Image (cartoon, rainbow, N blue to C red):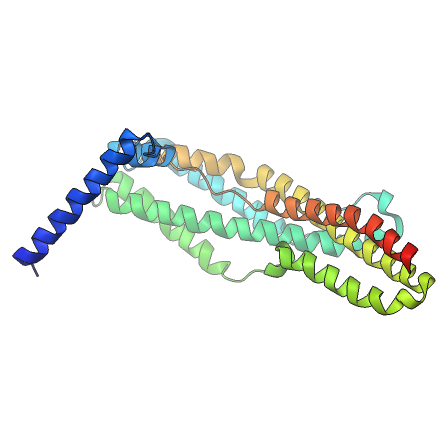
Length: 275
């Protein structure tokens, strides 16, 4: 279906207005690097388009890189659910901290593994579509994509960490519960002090579990798949970066919890002194 003369005229008019706006922004120095083609994303897109005749940058190294990634995913997926060995300095708290740390580390590792499989599968599919039919590159990419699809299907379920645990709602919810418990106890200073100490202790435990879980997950991810994943992207010739894990995000949540404890201690002491 083709556009009529009126539609064509309107489209040309809108395009002309848009060009004038671009010229005006450029004269004012407000045109972004993205619009001028100088942004990092645009440069990456141009490099991808410049190599459209090569579906694989390193055909000989691609198969080996893919096998290395598969072995790394095996090491990560089969060991992700294993509980870490915490330091003896935790004393009797080791029994309580171990499952909490394992839950956080497990969630980060399994989620990152699935993100890697999804992104690599998409990359393989796009390069397969770009390769000549029945060429060596096409066959290698088709086989690798099918294998990655199988891995994805076999890991369709995972132990999830509730989303609210890594959001600000978790911190505000904990403070709400702490306030609800402390407020009735303000009639008795000793009871209020006990409730406050217990609440801050739980906050500290959660923060420690988040921080340790993120640290352990980062170490395991780096050990298992960081280098193989980079090798796959180099062999394919992708100009995009490999997907990043959530370790830093979880670590930031842990630091926010620690900061909440630091703020809550003098606040609680002040309220107890006034009660």
